[in-house]
Length: 247
Ligand SMILES: [Zn+2]
Image (cartoon, rainbow, N blue to C red; front, side, top):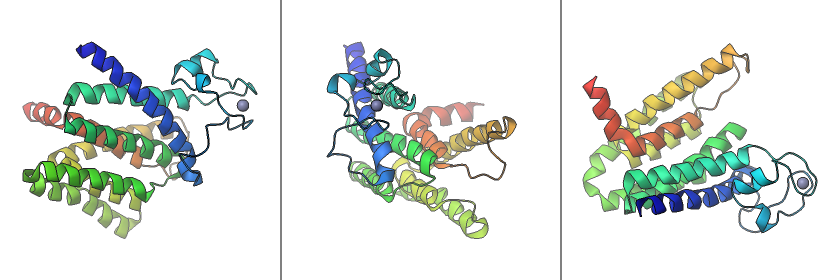
């Protein structure tokens, strides 16, 4: 039964991932995410429902549009797979609970921010509003976490704000993200998320420099790494803190 649920959550996640792909493409272009059907970005032909099955359609069509045979970005099945995997992990960590519902919404928003920030270096404000809303629902359900949440909201965002004001080296979207995510996570998990973001972001920057992908001065988005940190901290912060203290 456990396995059946896990498989269902993975498949459900890939379907949601398919919708996230639409959002990642359309939100930065200010296009509606609900009205028109999906179409090929090359030839504009509408994608038939049977060619829109997450992951499988991409494999079946060999990564090409059925109409114009232009290559379809690997990113589409990748986002679907990641979302499926994240839904599965959320279910296994949190079980069937209200926390699971909140964390699934959070996960979707974090996946959207990750890819949109990579593309545009911007985090649309609506995402901060959604995470802030999740944090408030969480606080209504768990009012004893209020102090931890309030500390979480400022523990990283205020240092970020100071860095932004003194050096200009931090984006406003990242500051707001760590404010609302901190409110959701509480202070311990917020610190965990920041450490994971710093390590993963640092490794990525090193990779860019070593392989000369980008000049040292080129702007690198930090939001995607904050999102990875927030997602991992929302699921594993207790285990990670226990592990760290045992070292
Ligand atoms: Zn096409």
